[in-house]
Image (cartoon, rainbow, N blue to C red; front, top):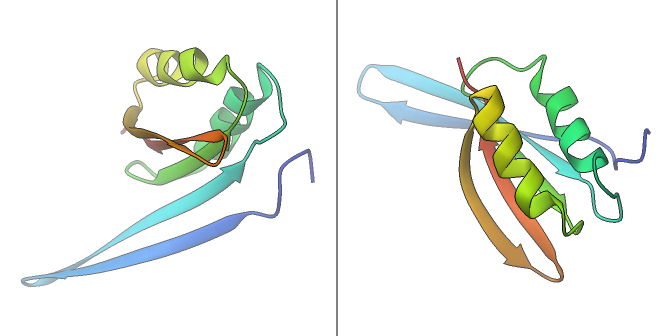
Length: 97
């Protein structure tokens, strides 16, 4: 599977008065992949998703701390959070409109 573990997809349903909101969240495990592969995997997975979808990218490449925020800024996507966990960094990204 092109260097990434099996696709994990989670669908979140939120009930609001008179409506249901559905957001899709995918997880990309890019641990062990070096620049530019984490960002290339992120771009490839974001492309077919509808606007508002979220992706979680796990990467341990030191360059990703610069590359992922730069990619999001250039492509117009929103970098929702960046956290550290167990020797890798977790990036949460929302696809733009």
